[in-house]
Structure formats: structure tokens, C-alpha cells
Image (tube, rainbow, N blue to C red; front, side, top):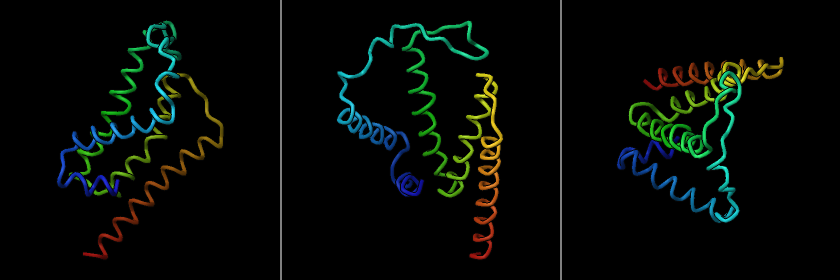
Length: 143
């Protein structure tokens, strides 16, 4: 977030995303060579699980969904958001991701949570509130 906040001042978010994913892709191609990828997943029907368990989609559709809506779009939105929000505000909002993912898993997949998991979610939310209040206090003292 801190690096992104400085980079979006002089460069478009789209370009930063392209370069970031380009370097990440090259790194992963070195760590896990492309010939080890299970390409058969593209043509297999995949069960959607949870409340949509009676439906299936081809693997390529789900992989494309993850790439576009689960990876590229969020990074673009974060970088565009850094033009209007500070890195600390953006990272605070980003801390909500695991909590929202847990709610989504409960709704879609019918997951149940243990006391420890619910406590962890509450601690994350409390941490977000505390970090935000601390940021506002520090901002007011600096003014």
C-alpha cells in the first residue's frame, strides 16, 4: 500500500497492475514451471458447491473468474483508490477481506464457525476500528 501510494502519483494504475502481474507471473513460472500446470482443469466440469451445488461450470470459466474478478479487478480498484485514500486507510479497508470472505463462505458454502474463528473475526474488526481511531487521532494532533 505504501509503495502503491507513491507510484500512483506518477503512473496510471492500469500500467502498475500490468507490470506487477507481469513480474509476479515470471516469478511463478520460475518457481512452478508451466509444464507442471494441470491443463486438464480447463475442460473439466467443476461443481459450484454450497447453495449452487446442483450447478457446474467448465474449469476455464472459474479460472477466468478468479483471474479477472478475484485478482486483477481488486488490485486495479486498490490502486485507483490510493489516488483518493491514504495507504493506511486503504490497508485498513483491506483488513476486512478475511471477514467478508468468512461471511461469504457461511452464505454460499454453508460453513459453520467455531468460537475461535468468530473470535478472530471480531478481533480483526476491533483492530480495524482501533487502527482507524488511532490514525484519526494522529492526524488531528498533526493538524
